[in-house]
Length: 186
View 1 (cartoon, one colour):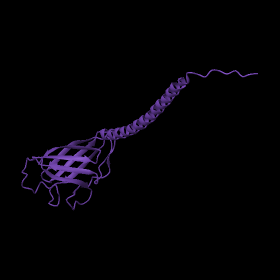
View 2: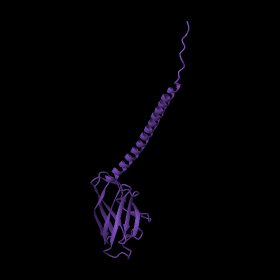
View 3: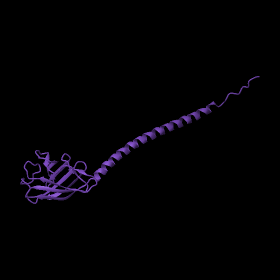
View 4: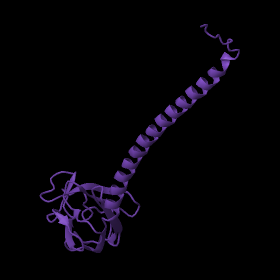
């Protein structure tokens, strides 16, 4: 028996375009998969940063202090604040985080100091005996600052530059949480 011979194929080039198309499709799928995983990673990182910012913003928005009354007693030289927490979070009034800023009528800074529960022996602090703990939600707290002592960085009483009926502006900043401000007359 003799084996039958088939004539040689004249079109051997038909297989090359099919392989090329398959390789291009595989490379496209691989590139799309890599881009997808990269996008998912970037998106999750951005979402985490946004959530962190949102939490910080919510904490700041939910912390609010209002000055119910402010009074400067000319006879005593005491500046008395009645603060009220009108937010939904307790606010720390610790001396190492609360700043008192006092400006004169021309907006010149008289003092920019931290509150101190004990003796204010340096120019970095002002004595505030009740400046400790938290101001709880819907609670009020009275703070009294003595503005007459020559040792006090916020002394406005012995300073002859500020006559009676002078308007002063103040700001109380409770850390990075919240703040309040206003004006009073000497």
